[in-house]
Amino acid sequence: MKLPLPLLLLLSLAGFASAQIVPRQSWCRQPLSPRLPRVAVPVRLVVIHHTASAPCYTPQQCQQALQQIRAGHLLRKFRDIGYNFLIGGDGRIYEGLGFGIRGEHAPHYNSQSIGVAFIGNYQRALPSPQMLQAARTLITIAVQRRQLQRNYALVGHCQTKATACPGRQLLDELRKWPRWQPKP
Image 1 (cartoon, rainbow, N blue to C red):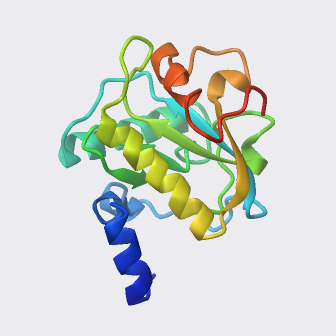
Image 2 (cartoon, helix red, strand yellow):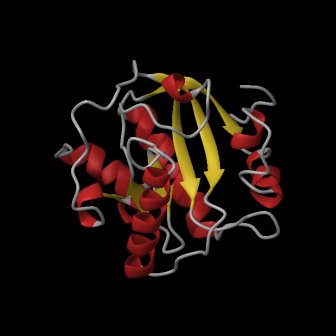
């Protein structure tokens, strides 16, 4: 999608230029199936996860991590990777399923949410400032592209089911974000 120059300049001034979305085809040779279920957009919810795996710090490490996460999800009989987007330790936003596709990340909420996973384990440590900013930027892009309602709610995975995800430290950080809600 080519953005008009005034919008591109505005995004650049707001710090969005460095947080471009890395397309799925850069890390996965398998295209998305056209049979994957869609969601009615804009959705109302952002569900934040952590992958509870090793972190990644370079594009190569992050692409390997994405491939491993997808392989694990396929072994669990998911249709593909379960998240719409993932945030790497390199500060990049990686496209998983992308916008408009129903994820497999939060039972009972998949059809009304975008699932965003931070690569790594955030039970005892916070994601880097660059990762946190990338997630904020992704949310802004989702609202601007009308994939997410302007009055969206932000929750951690543990607010949708009994789990430690997205980790204690990341959940504590999310509670400070303006659209965080105690209940989905």
